Image (tube, rainbow, N blue to C red; front, side, top):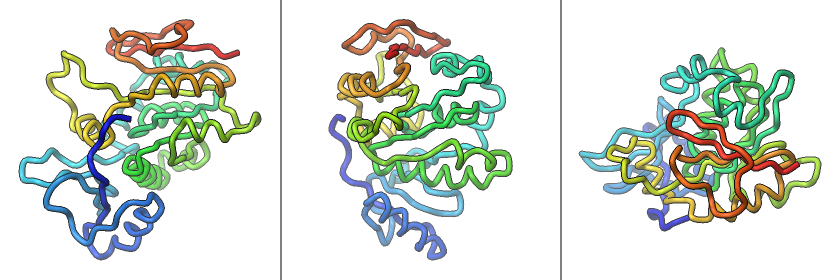
Amino acid sequence: MSERQPDIGLTAEQALFVPAARRLAERFALAWLQRPPASGFFLCLGAAGLELHQAGGRAPGAVRVEFSGGAMGHRLRFGGGRGQPLARAVGLKPGYNPSVWDATAGLGRDGFVLASLGCRVTLCERSPVLAALLADGLQRAALDPELTDWVDERLRLVAGDARSELAKLNAAQRPDVIYLDPMYPPGKSSVRVKKEMLALQQIIGTDEDACGLLESALACARRRVVIKRPKRAAALDGPKPAASVASKKTRYDLYVTV
């Protein structure tokens, strides 16, 4: 991981949310803030859930993990189901839902889509800030009547470095598929960056150890490793992918391990 911003603390929007906010801060070893800072990023728990804010009058809007509505809700309904490139890359077939480790979970969107299609997904995230946002998003999703039947059953969160966490798995715990979506520096064509990506780039940097993570994933996955790449980007250094599945802007490189 490249150089990132200083540690980010957590506060509460109102006194009502202080107990839950303190529990989150303790769970993910985040500093407790009595009030929002004058500058920089901070987490705040309020009526809308846990949000990542940047202090300052011209700061972009808050970032929140939201699985039950908005763009994510639209993707779940109209994203192409089991025929979409992500599902085909992971290997979903009639009657077969592979177990998946999303080893670079980020905001959890791809992992959540795979869970919605029937996969049991482990979301692994090493950034305490993102892990806290994910935990809050999953908790709220489990309360949604349209999602509650499967969220707790198919999704679990692991807060830690994927290479270390994968090394702890015994033979029975190894997933069928390991999915990687490393954070990369913006390309030359990235004139406008979404607020979520801009914030993530500033607080966690880029995944400069992606090649090492690929090596660990290849040693652990039962069937395949899938790496999400910009469509025109080169494959990661190391073994050549056995195949690729492309969409309009994205390519999924497949590495077979069986």
